[in-house]
Amino acid sequence: MHKAQGSRHKVQGTRHKAQGSRLKAQHGARVVFWALSFVLCALCLDADASAQSVNGGYSDPRTPGTVSTETPRQLVDVTFRQRLNDTLPLDAAFTDENGRAVTLGQFFGGKPVILAFVYYQCPMLCIQVMNGLSSALAVMPFKAGQDFEVVLVSFDPRDTPAIAAEKKRAHLEYWSSEQDASAWHLLSGDEATIRRVTSAAGFNYRWDEATQQFAHVSGVLVVTPDGKLSRYFYGVEYSPKELRLALVESGEGKVGSAIDELLLYCFHYDPESGRYGVVVMNLVRLGGVLTILFIGGFIMLARRGESGPPQAPSRA
Image (cartoon, rainbow, N blue to C red; front, side, top):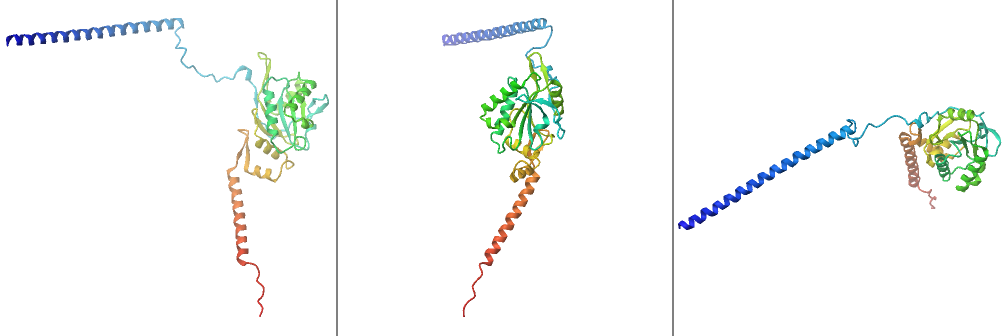
């Protein structure tokens, strides 16, 4: 019995020793963990201090900076401001693509005019303006030359009639619209005349020496037959519906049908956006009128049905 108790005491002693060894091991691991953490923190602080000394004390360059609100130097004074109802200088003298001396007013008088300021040696943006215009005209019900004229004025005084003629030929050939050649007029002129017309239309541009190109805003205008600026459309893509409405509105009753006039009643031009928007109240009024007409017609038909055809007199 004493031997059994001694054995138990030995086993318990062994267990206590094992537990003590585990506790010592855990304590040692904690010491090592905190020591390594301290070393890593010290290294990070030292690296940060070194980075600051290299960067002159500036903050982390990956931190987002302040967004610049300054206009790039190339775009200073480059604008296209609407001057609605102002009149273009129709006496301005140009040369057309055929080398003939013309005035701007020769293309006005009976029809509205779609006007664009481009330059014929432009490598990209002006081409997109012309393509956007032709794309819209291709699906419109109006015919160039019959319902409106297209006038392009180059704001590069280096453009010549020969360059204008080649530009016109290539463009109309690309759009398979050579039949409209007589309605497209590509003008060139001197610097003073160009500035006079572009300034009157609110179109300001500038030459950029770095790129050897003109910085300018893209868009087209619709002008009334008497030369008043009527509508502006910005960008390089133009809605056929809105261009159609602008021509009807600027045509002073000479362009479009009764349906087009009705569309003008439902849509209104917003100068802020340069777009036509739905006039809700006009739609409500139109809907009310149509409803009254429908109800009135229905009542008349109902009364005719009730009265029936006249009966023949009975024979005795």
